[in-house]
Image (cartoon, rainbow, N blue to C red; front, side, top):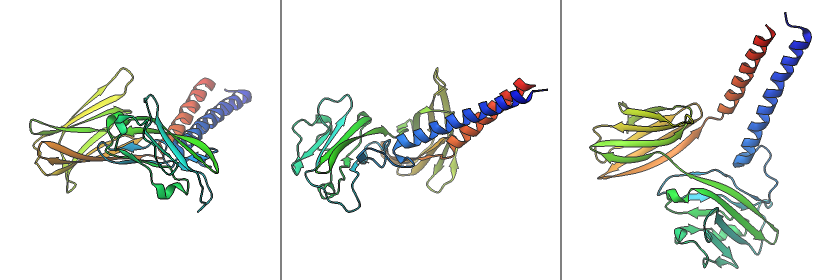
Length: 274
């Protein structure tokens, strides 16, 4: 029979574990750019971890934290990318300043001059490439002050190709192991063959084949686990595949993890007491 002291000790351990995990969740949400109380930085971003579709345009959010409808003057904006020689984009003295722009971003970037007076220095990145992935720093200087914001850009997976009359999709870096579903334009579920290959860390690479596809038809490829859902629309155009992918994140996943952690800690305590 456990003593009163042992029971109190175990209860305190459970509460400490849950409290620490809750702090981690709050910090994660805050750092992702959707925090509960905003940021103390004067330059903010609505989305610090955007996921872009390859060959599609992507807006990188960055704005100066001014009052509603406030107008600021002498605005300059600089976009840089970690590990990149030269700049991604620069705007100063009312015009582009692209002398030091890296060739990778030539004719692919722009800001919105009409919005700069309200502190909006968001960057439109055109025709996203896989090489565009990485950490970007947005720096805004104005009559009201200055500041920076960091944005981590990722490109959407999976990738698609046509091979021997089959539509092949490859999705990397999935954990835990996901489920895969193919469907046609009308939503009818189709039978595909899928291989799940884990690496040494248990992270899965998913390769799925849909046989006997028709040119000009559109197919939906859905990959999901209890953390995230990836939904891709793939349209066959001759020998090419035109795709669009978006993600749905499970907001309850962190709470489920906390619940699981609490249950396991409780079980261990009960085992210890008995």
